[in-house]
Image 1 (cartoon, rainbow, N blue to C red):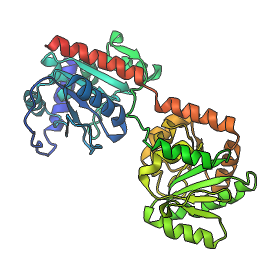
Image 2: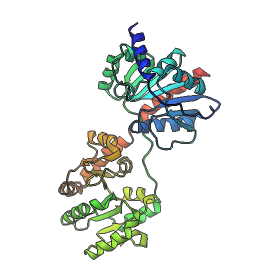
Image 3: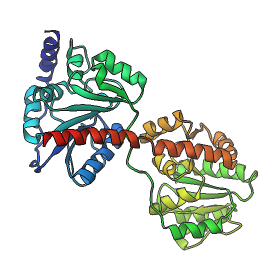
Image 4: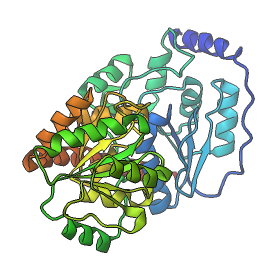
Length: 398
């Protein structure tokens, strides 16, 4: 009775929300799994799950999100979620006929969840942090969250704190387990191995750091850091990639005019023994520079609008990470790296110079890089467990 009252109040509020349903493409034949993410920040693990279901199992994957997501793998259909009304949820499920539903982080869409449960569809929650209603629908609806959570046969929590939150909110105790996060798509960027070997020979035994995607507003901070630290390590080489690749050539000329010893990648120049700054501009070679440099500074994070490259890119390739106080779109990833002591945060150019000088000690950079690699490659076992559960469901569904 209490849950029914909560559902009635929730549905009453939804009746006043405008918005038409998006046109839906035809449903492909075969098994279909519905994955729902509440926002782009929650998407990486689910995108990797979607890719593997599509590539390895031949399943059609429907992924819904209220906001735009990165382009998924072929075989994955992107759609907005249905409106949170019983009628919209029923029409959505009638059209797509999923064999299983996987939600993440903890967002509950009661209309869809309860309609799926009424039809006997298996539901799973992964990367579970804390249960909550959709944005804009927060409120107290008696018994509604408990009723929705009781529909989930499996809740995979990221830690024990999250597990307690789900149990307290009404998830069946036997359905909740602590496993951690699913893995994100691999951030290991490619490179030509012959090119890496040749440059490694040219720079052998030299300390190197890579300043990636540096906006003009941060150029002086990077240069002052290099000037300060080169006094401690006179053979230090800076690989500098400006935010705008077209700026590489004029920047190299300006640096030479200031007295720096500079070589320019786009002019087919290679770093020589006396080169202090190697200016590069081709983003297709990011994997090369991450592999070559034991230390990477994320441009945009100190004096820009936020980090301009994913920290998981250098992390996946063994480069220790330095970053400023502005994470930009990568707050979640930098938060994970920070919690694992796998990245070094700095607040000022002076802090950057101090941190860089500290990381020139190979063992310290290696410890940071190893911790970062662990974070970047974390979650493989969790993804395997989730895949195994979905595969069992698909086998049972026939």
